[in-house]
Image 1: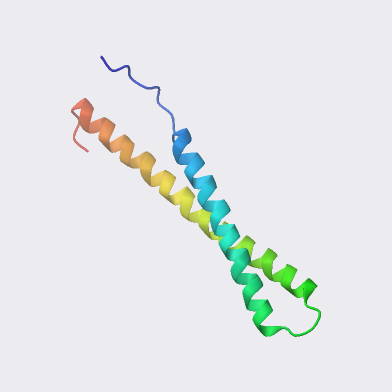
Image 2: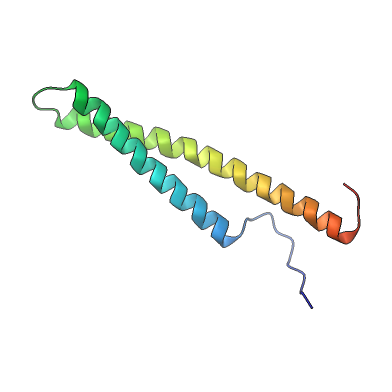
Length: 92
């Protein structure tokens, strides 16, 4: 017999861990893109501009992925709620 899980708005640990990893990977990709954009355009001593490119690219990409991750986790929560109602025999 399956025990009912307590009601919670929190997504599962696996979903949260997946979102965290996705945010980290997108930050890495954004940093690489920012670095590449500056490296292609800069001649000579470009340490500071490359560092700024890495920082800005990472922040933009990670911030965008964080927004997407939150929206996905909210959608999963709503989906789970609909499935729970259907199992209980209530029409949506």
